[in-house]
Image (cartoon, rainbow, N blue to C red):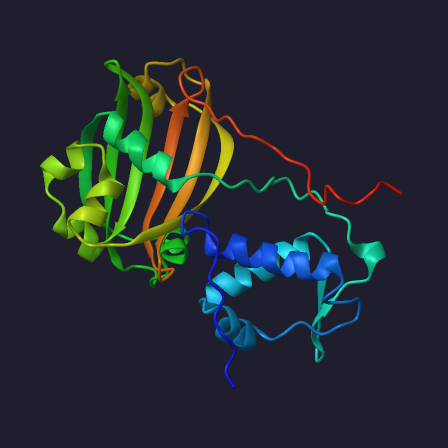
Length: 258
């Protein structure tokens, strides 16, 4: 008899993160023990009703935390307790709200600088899951707050999406909202990385800062509920006008220190 698909807690939290935590709880609670073989990717897809990319993202996170090990010819195994120490890789994984991002787009205006139809390079093609050289739309915009530029946004859109948007819609600032309401896309989650970048002469002039000023660089890929990427965006924010506030909590609060 087929297993019943799991209903995840919230559509606002990325599915891979929810699946990761479901499997993590089974491992830490002892449902899966050291040396046990984890279900295959195909079995997890059927059991939880998610896509392969969701399963792989969840397994990657568990492997990074030392909870599972992939053995050639044996599959994915639950790691021994002694190896379950999180390795710092230079990245801390946090969960935020895609709704807040959409609301910011609706609350802050933008100025369109240019829009071009270009060929996707290898990096853009990988993130949008298309072939290198496939036509896409590249959009450059300035995000404003009280008339001051505080962010340079460079959007990369699949050709069918970019061609469907008007200049007025692009100038509204609420690009993700427009993609949902006009194009009927069901946006579900986004993966983003945050890092520091230095303002080059071109960016410094647009953001009204000195050359070499430290900026908050954000790269983000937005996915639909079917895990289809519909936008890759690279944004440079003035760090004096924009920042992040994150609440951090302890994991495994019930475990006593040994």
